[in-house]
Length: 319
Image (cartoon, rainbow, N blue to C red; front, side):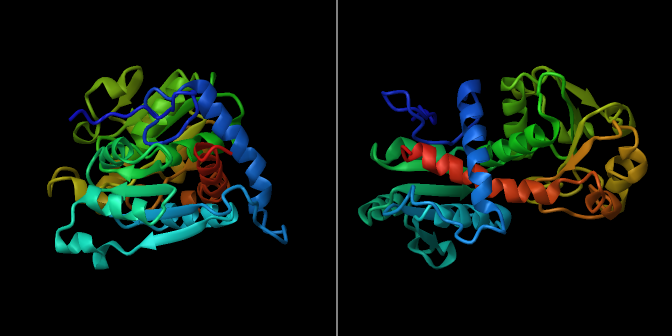
């Protein structure tokens, strides 16, 4: 069976979000513009932080991998849209007894699920689910293996647009473990679609992919060379769970070669922003002085993630 899915229905409406590959520019802009409308709902000063767009709908969070930011912000986003939220406890579910993924999905559909938010260690598992569910059920990919993390890519685009406005002249550097990073792949897809022509991948050869997904991306093995004159610096965690031991230098050795320090950040533009999808390993990919410094927008990414995930769920549900 081919693992691909049409994310749009016959009327041309977005009904699933499982990848940013080939997602049209107009659709990305629509999601970002919708998220901007929801930012006011996430304002801490707002007394009632809810809108009724998903009232009566059931959102099932299925996280087969650990998560802090993604799972929590999806739950907050769904509740702020007035949905009923069910967090499936995977270790205590019947999957631990050998039930297949699609049998689990069938049973949850029978419980009147409307939206599945799925994180899975197997690449394209959310796409397989989207192929399988009835037309009235929607699927959002919350990260699948080393494949894609579309809502993270979208919230990163929102963050860049918020602070830098125009993508066409933007210079973006992505540093670290790119080959295993679904975040990097989603960001590269979205940046290209939005017109960014200077995307830089910085890291050791073993952590940089060599495939069509890197088309048009400038590769640097020297972080000092790669950071010169950039507007955005995104550092990535080394994903040890997806690689063989000894594949790359670890800890202090990696930090010495590729860690983002204040001195290295000074090579970028003076108003460059620093991003990280989390979780951060301080002293490995990023210095605390940078992570907590005035150019860091890492916590802004988290806050914007709520609005972006509200936008995605409200759009795929037809609102």
